Length: 123
Image (cartoon, rainbow, N blue to C red; front, side, top):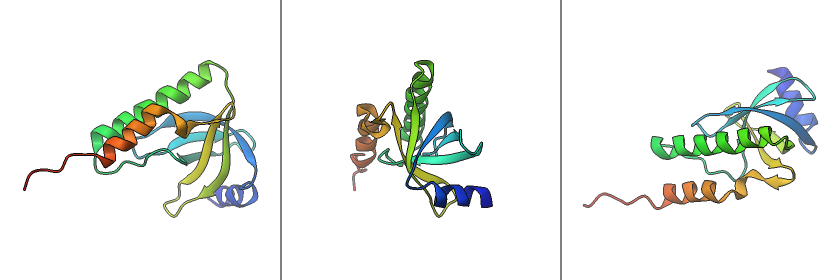
């Protein structure tokens, strides 16, 4: 854990090249840091964080996995910007693929909107 803390404090302002290792419905993805060899759980900045709605959380996980797995097969460069540790032990970072932010994906935005516009049950 001490190594992970030093990674976040010394490399926070730098851009880090990372290898994607899969995403979970909790809203984080695993990345292997090529410089240090550490595997970090990273919450992509700008990607909706879903809690309490398993269907949307699973759809979000599936979309993140599909996007990032596709990028690997296309030999695109995945980078983490502004890596910082969160209170729960995970990290947050802006994730880019060939310089384009992952969070601008229209389907990820739609999943976030569904979270907000969920119909309320009648009184």
